[in-house]
Image 1 (cartoon, rainbow, N blue to C red):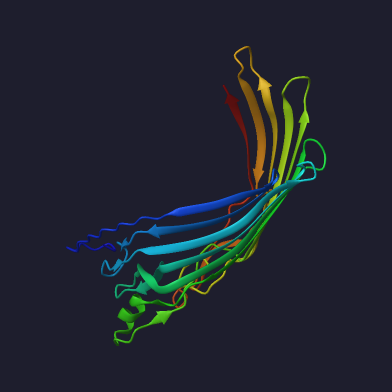
Image 2 (image 1 turned 90 degrees about the vertical axis):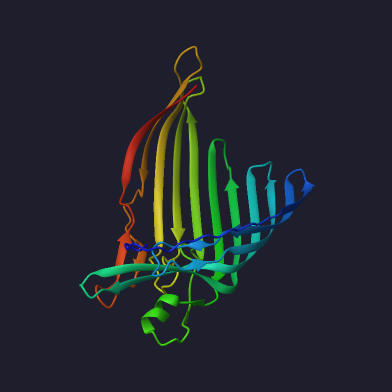
Length: 290
């Protein structure tokens, strides 16, 4: 446990039944509306990185969703919109600490606790696909997410204070941007008289800054990443029907750099630390379909 031998033991049994119900109705052959109710569950446990192998309880969630899926203009336009509510009870959150030791080292400690009360998550998602001409497809998707977690009891800080006074701290849902936007372009060009095509794909992805640790009010940077792919697809390989696809691709096409993970946990000793995203990468791959 946390690098030290102990005789601590742990046993926990969790049982749960989670129903899901969906009610859907076809308004027309191209328009469908639906409503969904579901529950979810995550078992409790104990962290081997805690100071005392402290157990934490399960969390549960109730979710409600309504939406519409539609096609119109001779099915050249597709629009899907959904709104949802999630109420999560006793959310499991992590308190991450770097504690200086007497020998000069720093001990990384993680305690998982339950944020008593209801975590509120609210969101809207929309997806639009347009095919203005043959072989060209344009896509746009947007997601808005609101989150709020009740303050959680910080047992690590209580142990460090050693005064018996409960400490409650604001906590966050990690890696969940308030706004996220993605755009895509796909185009295919026939080559010869067979099924071979030259295909082009491009996507751009934007996201607001996010929290990267449950217990730290420190945000990362906003991001925009573009990716591209060009492929020569469905090249015949003989009488057996095999087809070859060869593609060249690039991730993070414009070599954009941003901080995707940031922490101030060891600020008093070392200052903030952060991690940057991967640089531009590119490659070639080949796939054979039988």
